[in-house]
Image 1 (tube, rainbow, N blue to C red):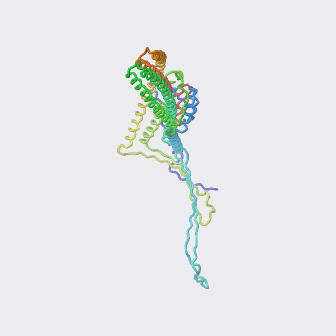
Image 2 (image 1 turned 90 degrees about the vertical axis):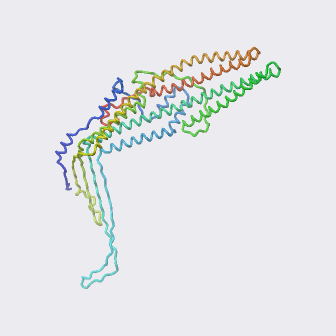
Image 3 (image 1 turned 120 degrees about the horizontal axis):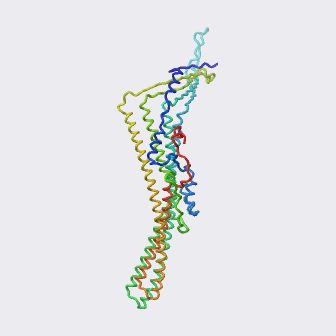
Length: 499
């Protein structure tokens, strides 16, 4: 039967009393109470859209445009963007930090196995023998020493600082996940905006090319009339000037298109080489995303989620700092085994010498020059800082939503007016060109009418692109789809470290 030696620093009964007298101090409740104040009357069942790391949701957001090329570009960017990859690594680091913190809840066990060879020189012989055996040549002797050790320890979380750190790490992980989701949505929006900008530049270039064709046709008529002596040279020079301006507009539009293509390539994670080919025209923007109660619009924003979870993490870190002011109670359950054998491994793994130990200690800092108080003051300040940032995040979120809705509706109203203006200007241009061909309209008046028509059409194209971009901005302000939501951690399900 194995003999188990046991050494005790305190009795088991005393240790049990010590454990029962020290519970985990609550930290989640104050954090959530402080957040409710900053929510300004928003409901307690605060919810947030799930952030699982699956890009399908971000890609599906842009399926409303019914554009397969746009969807492919968004998917490519989410797979290749370097900034997003860096954000993923931040999430992985937070996951590892949480696992590292949770490891403190488990016992620690380690084992060691070694062998050591000792060699010595000696003379073979015995002078005391009868008759004496005289020494022969020197010989080398070797001894081998085998060792085996086993140590284990477990420290209960008496003061609750470990569980508090786990809570803070879990909140930090979710905050990092929310920041990653924010980065992903920003990248998807950046791709869509760059994509529509390329389309706009293509339409503007097409408009400039039509303008150049009209200028060339007009100049041919002007040249014919000048050669016939029916107009003065100033009209010919005016025609030459406007033709050169139209050619310059083509060069500028082509440069703007190349810049837009390069911006899209960079957003996709490609090297900018102007090799993308975009087909199609600007689509009509979807309807205004469905809006519900204020909490239904703010709750899905990743920046709000990150700020809220940052408060939980900060309150946890503050509680760890406050615990340092209390007497530090510690209990250790340990075991150890150290075996050694010479020239044999027999009984090397014998557990007869296994020693168990239970110990407890209490320590209190008497004087540290105010270092603990300073750490607590810093932590309290960080709490207040996190709360104020959270409150400002809520205000900014409401501001983004209100501004985005107003801008989207304004651009929609402007589109109606700009469409009417463009249609009317095109009709005036058609009539003006007929009059000029008949000789009843001056060249200067024709150019004025043409400028008005082209400006009206260019403004309509720009407004169409602005409406699409504003829809993307509004969609981001609402945090994606506000109807797909799930509960955030509450004081109840956060106190035990669940996520």
